Length: 221
Image (cartoon, rainbow, N blue to C red; front, side, top):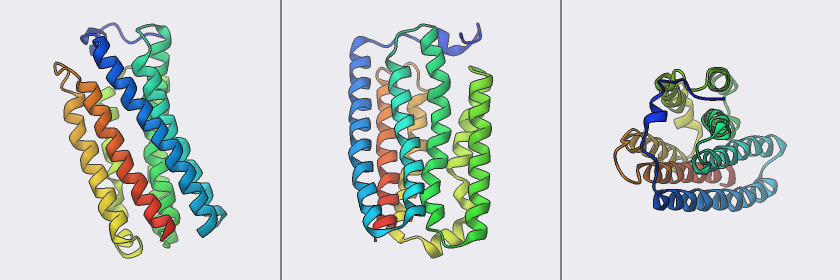
């Protein structure tokens, strides 16, 4: 599998060894923190919640680990056919992570109509994005970024039930994570900046941490 011949990714400057090492360290820290954090969260949910909440947290955990694991594999593997295959899964796992992050919160929403409405919208969008990335790799990349942001901000659909049902700290942490994700995009597209990829992944890690804290707080209060 290769990218389209005119794809801008093929003309991007190669990352230096220092950039690759730094990126590897960021990914390693994010994966380790995710494993430890999810283990703690699962234990707490087992003690305080039921099987539905546990299932939702497991879905969230699968999305979180898939995102960081495929990102590490794709970004650290040298240019090769394998790298472009991993690119499909790296970009697809972002959709899985977004939908997975919503899932525990929707379980706690307490409003069946809005939980189902937002859940169907987010998961349908995520599945469509995954199909797009797997079937048409390297195409419509700008559209894909737009879909990421649209899905991430789709909580506005059920903003009033979320304000009414979810604790304040959870809402603030969700908002903070979303702002950090969007701010990080500036570094993602700043291709000439040294360590831009490392900075972008740092933003992603911090934002994911905010969303983890939001879910953990809501699940364990």
